[in-house]
Image (cartoon, helix red, strand yellow):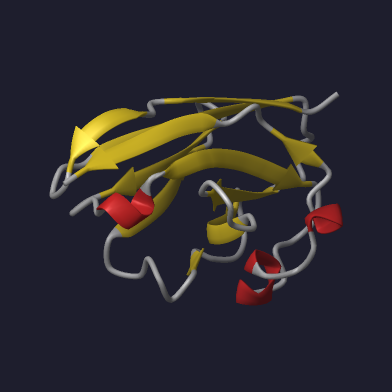
Amino acid sequence: QVTLVESGGGSVQAGGSLRLSCSISGYSDSGACMGWFRQAPGKTREGVAAMHSSSGGPYYADSVKGRFTISHDNAKSTVYLDIKALEPEDTAMYYCAARLKLCGGSRILIVGENYWPYWGQGTQVTVSS
């Protein structure tokens, strides 16, 4: 059973930085494609970054390029999302997701959620101006 647990959200002022973490367990040595998504109130869920644990990526949504960085620590089975220069528009619930296949390119950020079988519970990020 693959499980994901996010942490690191919080309330910050615009211009600040945050590091979100997602601990992933239960996947095999063949690796996993890991992604970060966010959903703001009243909006659809948006894929912001993805990478494979051993092959492929990173991939970013155009809206976050230059401010978001996804990384992975294989030893800790943890994927991170570093966000800098936070903007009020970044306010959302951030979710970590995984699929036990290759990412297959940046398109993985815009395909349907059924391409991502495993999800964490989410961590809230609130940015005040």
